[in-house]
Length: 223
Image (cartoon, rainbow, N blue to C red; front, side):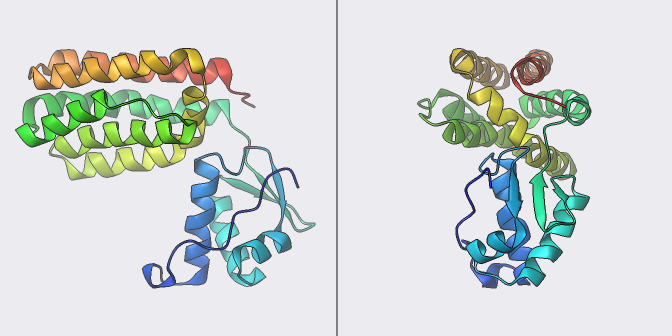
């Protein structure tokens, strides 16, 4: 096996309807944040034991993950975490390039003063020391913008896109030389929202997302 097994299920069972759902949520989190690395292989029986469940709910969860395109199931009871895909990342970012700038423009017009304060605070906070910490902080900043845009459907769509792009974005936050650039771009976007300038907020966000895509394509091993 090329990747560390997940620990026993961390989700309290009362928060999910079935063991299969708990397994699905746990493995999704491990795959999307890079703890189960793209291309790594895992024995299904060993994985079930590490999670503290039987093979039946694991296989049900794995079928869902396979339909999500996150794992590839093999006949000999192993699974492979889906490799990073150039086609997938370009499709995901093609949608984000439309929706993220739109959300930023809406936020510049509609965000409450309290929401603007939160966006600025998230942009200005101290840089996280770990890649996963920076990934989480990055998502919180963008989510604050989505939530302030006054469009629930838009926020939900962008949240789902983030779920699928986290494992690509993790590559970007691991690039040491780009850390400060991302933080600077966040501060500029926050300033445009504070200034109630939807055109500038839209343009800055579009450039920000374009830069992220370029970095993924430059540093990721894509099939």
